[in-house]
Length: 270
Ligand SMILES: [Zn+2]
Image (tube, rainbow, N blue to C red; front, side):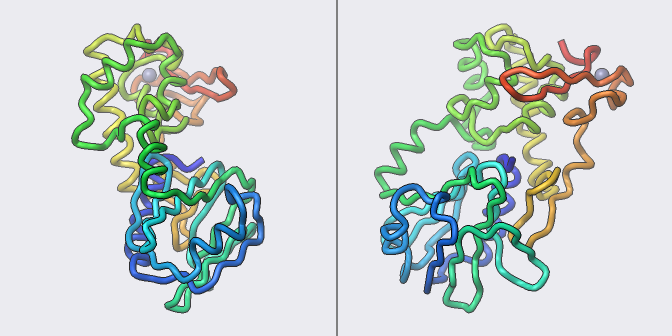
């Protein structure tokens, strides 16, 4: 599932290609990836020009010259890419024909992704319901600590809740908890101030280095040109159960709760 670093990589790719281009035509092959009517979706986008591309949490935000905002959430397996010789799309859902002769494809194997159109005010309201951006300069370790105090949820589940902090999914939650020495099942409100500072630093370090590595490809994730990310070989705990911890050589364990696997080192994480 694409998390903050993968979505950020796609957004940076799109920022080089898309602003200033106009949607000449729109072909919807799989209407269930669109929220609402496909006729209204087409009416709102055909003939409109992309002004800017940005990210909020795991959402790709496209501001159109009409003032409307196209929000793309990639769900589990969504992809946005340019149709070109070396870029293979197996499950195309939408074709955006652009005025410079290229086709932008939304492809989604499992179709849990969603494309939705918002007015500026509707998006502001929706965005206000989401938690803070972990890489924003305004986000401080004291903000994290304060919010942790008000919840008894296991920290791994707490990190996945987009109302607490956006963009973190299971891979980077597990990696950050290993780096900060916190057990994934520890209740959020039992994390000390010192530990929350370590977690804050770990979260930012893990996310930033994953962006530098253009994201983690375990199976489906691809960038706009169809290439996988380089971060999977850098993972220190996720998916490594049965192998030795890279910090202490104890054996990495896997447990499952809230329907998701968690990976941890019993010696390094308490
Ligand atoms: Zn260890």
